[in-house]
Image (cartoon, rainbow, N blue to C red; front, side, top):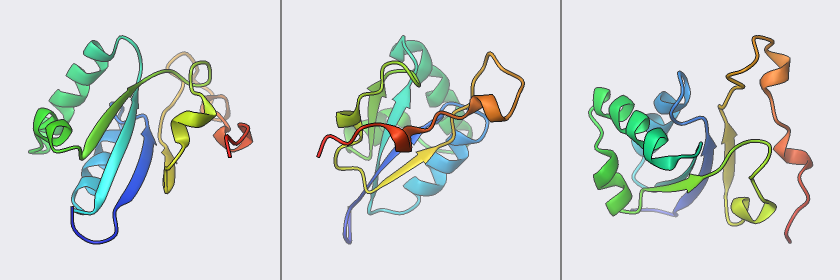
Length: 116
């Protein structure tokens, strides 16, 4: 990575919008992304791998280069305040797959207690 490194925590990376956001972030060489994936991470990462491959990106290589760090968890249940520690930016692109109401798909992580 060149320049001042930026650590981004991204939700929804394997979704309709999120993989495009991830690809755009990775076009900047100074960005590292921690990506929240639903369990089991093997299935979620396989989907992300396919989506990124369609955009010309190799997930395994990006993980190997520490440009992407896979974090297994779900919103709102398993995300802990410490999971966001060190993040310069949090981008929430995840949606609720069980709901058709736009407003119910948002999880307000800004209300989570700070670990600091």
